[in-house]
Image 1 (cartoon, rainbow over the protein chains, first blue to last red):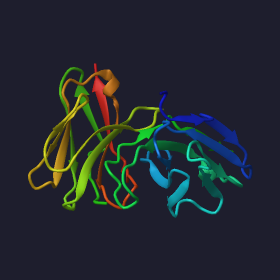
Image 2 (cartoon, one colour):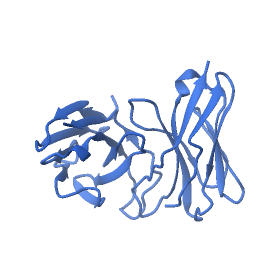
Image 3 (cartoon, rainbow over the protein chains, first blue to last red):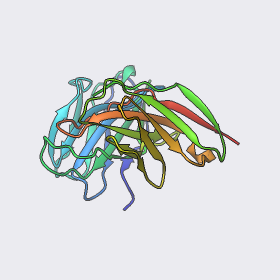
Length: 120
Length: 111
């Protein structure tokens, strides 16, 4: 197992363009998370999936952002019409959750190395 | 989730124990204390977590005060590779999937 894999590691784009990031979690992990981190700040929660179901979205996730996990394995995070304020590190994490949605279990996440987005 | 307060930065000599404090005076009875760290250009890495008893693993020890209003992460023999930002997070294990990271403590290990 190679851990959580994120691609691309770096993306430079012009304002107004669309970008897509991919996350491949650890294979037996059913829960997958996206976080965003700007310079000098800690990561901020964006959304999470249990298998293919997107169960929670932060209000940080504007209409321009969409995340999918179609087969409950890899996930994509797409940003449409990028703005300079979208420049950040986008982090993916996964874990094996037990129980239903109410019982979260110990929140021991394995993070990927992140995808750094620069919007010019 | 309860708010946490950590010093902005700390230094520690290589080979010495690094003691990182965290205040969480509004912690609730069902909330755990988690520690993660983030080495430059990497994603956060889980270190340890606990509820009220002291915990130890291969990476660190976690000491939680009896009133649970503060805790200390101890790296027993710090190495240069321990230079990182350390995040203290308080979170319940029920009905909440979010980890709320603050700005953490930037620990620098000095040779």
